[in-house]
Length: 263
Ligand SMILES: [Zn+2]
Ligand SMILES: [Zn+2]
Image (cartoon, rainbow, N blue to C red; front, top):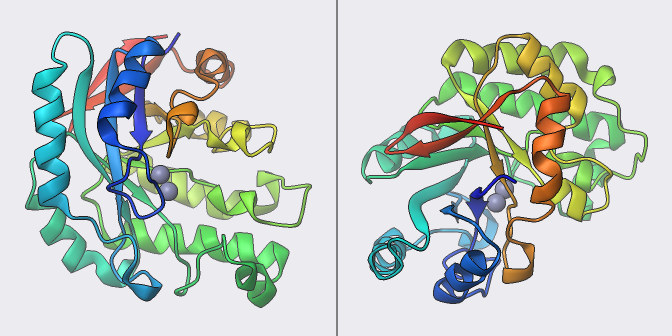
């Protein structure tokens, strides 16, 4: 089983009320060896939500890192909400802290979260998904100080179109994956898709396979859990999903450097 959860949130994220120390105890109980906390930092989110008090977050994390040394390896990460025009501010933030790992994610497209019903109301189903992928491409052309792209097709969680097929967006997805490979960036296997009942983890297995075909090697695994019962979600299925897509390794980041671990 994969024993490193590289995408987790606690009460330092706006959308979680999970105390960090309880999270650590749960993770130890679940048999995890490594966790990276990746609290949300979204600049310019409507209403000023999802701004991270990085000082307080880091202080707590380092306290727990010392307290639980030998029981759980605790890594210092962040999930940055990317938008192309934020690039200079994101760059300054990312380089200002000693993060082990940075996930770049899309949470807003043209200022709207796909989670909001307005999103697909405004764009329509197919265009809503298309627009999301277009924004990812714009983000990674503008900003490169991240390690993996998070939940690459997160948008489909909220789409009404049940028959999502990456083939419909193949050209755009290829362009994203080729760009990530050429930048030496990874993608993550985000098991929250399974929790949402999509029948697959993010990204869709076709996208994982394509990333591999195009030369991609860097895959982290994360539950995107925001509370205890969701950490390491369906991790017993994760290595099977990766092997089926052609991977022999998954990746852990420490000090922003990848280490490959055999599946
Ligand atoms: Zn996210
Ligand atoms: Zn997340």
